[in-house]
Image 1: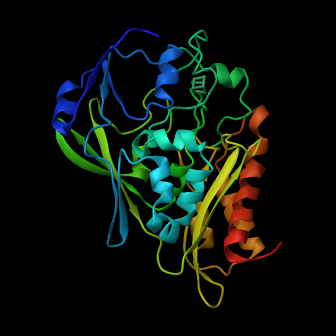
Image 2 (image 1 turned 30 degrees about the horizontal axis):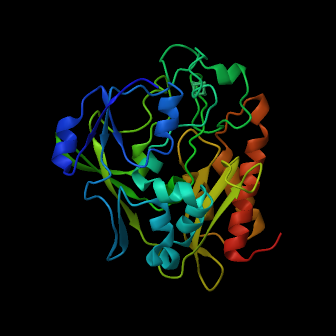
Length: 328
Ligand code: SF4
């Protein structure tokens, strides 16, 4: 690991003052330190932000205000999450072991880096995400776990977060602060698909800090589900996942629906095409199937991950069945 300086700050203003192009913020560090040991990240200075007053989870009218330093375990254990955001809780519990959930923060989870094996191996030269213009080893190499939505010819890396899939379905908003002031960014506009700049993954500007995430609570009567399909049941990343929430009328017509997909896209994926098919339709297997097809209509699979198109469709259909009680 490259040697680095370490500084601990206790105020946000001090954190922003310490930030420069050679420094990284350090919170839970659960993947950051791995990437530093592997030589993928090489900061000259770490700014420890764990003492900043960005902890805490608070219900505010119809939203949950989550401090960026709240841990995944704290959020999963929060009673409001259990009652009003059950699929967020499911996504958190399926993300990682309890040891990791006790360390990893919500802000860090949203910023986690891809699990693409080539990105994490500096001995591999061709990785546009590590070095723009170097190529993409995954497209010509092993890409079974890679993305089919939101890809480009320059990068097909999958975004690994589970909880971000549920949060993007809920229209969560990220609160950000920086030297230029505070701003709020909807999570749907926070992430960037790779295009020809895979090294730029989100809207965060140099030196800026996520301070909180504001999560709208599910409307009364909503039912939700987070279904994660993976190679093994124990703490594995998703091959495909679906976060769905539905308000069903007495006539079984879908009054309100939100859908996010994970494991299949370069960013946490909001499936607006599926929502358009579902909204106003009577719940049924045919409508669910049409919605799932619409969600994956833009997929651009590669030879080893073509199976993900049907897998993601089936995952979404199954999740909607679980929510609505519609049988096959
Ligand atoms: Fe790098 Fe993206 Fe290609 Fe993986 S998929 S090797 S992260 S450019």
